[in-house]
Image (cartoon, helix red, strand yellow):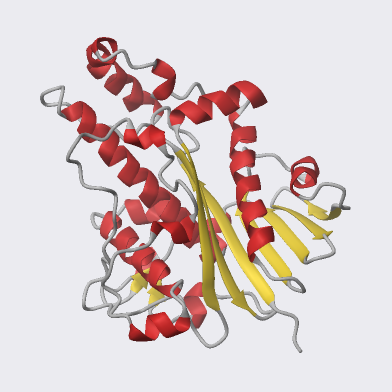
Length: 322
C-alpha cells in the first residue's frame, strides 16, 4: 500500500499591526508524493493576474487585497475551502449554501472573550453563509490527485499577544507559539504511517529553526537538510510520522496551500477588525475605520482616546506593544 502524503501550508496575517489580532492558519491536503499544484491541477483556480469571475482566485493575500473586489474573492475562496472539508457523503448531498461550521477550524477561532468585548447586545453572531456566486457553483479544492482535508486557525488577540510578548520578549516568538499550536494539531490530526510536508513563510527573517522545532518534537532528532538565505528545511521522524518542514521566503508566492492559508488568515483578521471598528464608530461620530497598521493605528488611537478613558478600557486589550 502506498505511503500517504499530507501537504500543509501555513501563513499569517497581522504580524505587523498595532491593532487587531495576529492570525495564523494551516491548510492541509491529502495526496501522493507529488506536491499539489494549486494552479496547475485545478484549472478553475487562478492567480490574481489571470483571475476570471467564473473561477476561484488563490494568491498572496496582499495581492488579492489590492483589487477592488478583494474581500469578495476571499469570501469565495473560504467558502470553497469549507465545502472541501465536508465528508464525501455529506458533500454529495449538500447544495453548498448552508452555514459554515466554525468548529471545523478549531476551538475559539475568533479569540474567545477578546472579540466578545467589541460586540453589542443584539449583534449578529459571526456566522458564515457560503459566498460563492452562482457563476462559480460548487467549485472546491478537490481533484483526482489530492484534496484539501483539513484546516486550522490560531487567532491571538491583542491582550493575549501582549501577555505572550511579555513572556517571550519578542513578537517573532509569539508567532512561533501560534505555529507550534498548528503543528500540535497537525500531529494529532494526521493518521500514523504518513509523510507530512509542511511549508511556511520565514518567521521574522530568521534562518535557524532547530530550537523552535525541538519544542514541537521534544526528544526527537531535528535533521537539518538546508539553511540558506532562501529556505530552511528540516526532517523529523517522531516514530508515528515523518515530517519534512520548510521555512521559505515568500512561500505564499510559490505554494498554493500557503497562499490559501494567507487568504484565510487575512479574511478572519478583516472580519475581526470590522467588529472592532464598528464598536468605536457607534461612539465616535464620523470616525474613520482603521486596518490597524502602525501610522494609521496611532491616528485611530488618538481619535478614540476619550472613549477608552470613559469606558475604562485597558490599553493592553487594544494596543499591541510591538
